[in-house]
Length: 336
Ligand SMILES: Nc1ncnc2c1ncn2[C@@H]1O[C@H](COP(=O)(O)OP(=O)(O)O)[C@@H](O)[C@H]1O
Ligand SMILES: [Mg+2]
Image (cartoon, rainbow, N blue to C red):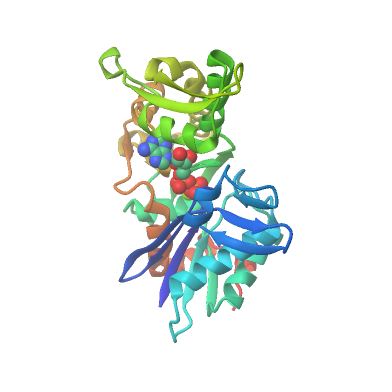
């Protein structure tokens, strides 16, 4: 059995070759500080965010693209692997994508957890490579491709050619940063405090990076009025959110342009022909593809399955293993 795991900052997705995506849950874990025990992981823990009593905490251990809680990351990985593998008799090979900001020590800890959870072999694969494979890009040719993966905590931008990464950049501006910007805007301009999940919802339903006046829609948010301390609800439109959303997405555009500027000219020519491929949940932000296309003058498309793309590519990476070993998977990160 070969399994691909995309350990994302917002979502963990498990793909099994031959079966497809078997697990997709938020990267959240809830712990009881009194008893030091794990209460729930994934979907159930996500529902607890912002609603826990003081001794319980629902945390996202990878939220900023780095491991902010080592132990909890391990517990979370262990839980997801156990859940995805159920009680399979064969020990699986696992390929994993971890957030680009995590250190070698941290990724080794993740590998150890995978092995103690029953993996026979563990490979780490770089996210842009997995995203490209998942987006059905032929990575073996001497042909430049630009991948922009917008996740929860980080946006990863990379130019790939000949089974290798030519140039890459990772910034800590992605979906979560837009949520935070929305929370700040609603507080400052309307005196209303809203939670993380409310902000995420309004982002997905209303926010946009590029829209025409006809496309201006609105949605309702619920929060606490800071002046009265009482619950309230408020109508928010796409154009109201525009400034705060743009402040964040402009940083993504800037980083993409920087990567293009540092790419050798022959490859820039290829990218111009092939276009930019966007993956990750954050790329679903309304108008994001249009904005990137306008600002870079390069055709921009969303991968067929932007959210699952990295997990699918991670699972499929076994087909490329021989070639990838020197190209992508750092040998020090392999354990047998
Ligand atoms: N339809 C949508 N519009 C805008 N943002 C979205 C949409 N769907 C998901 N997202 C955002 O995508 C981010 C998570 O993307 P994901 O690829 O799962 O992250 P990661 O790879 O870091 O785990 C979250 O910030 C979420 O709000
Ligand atoms: Mg991701």
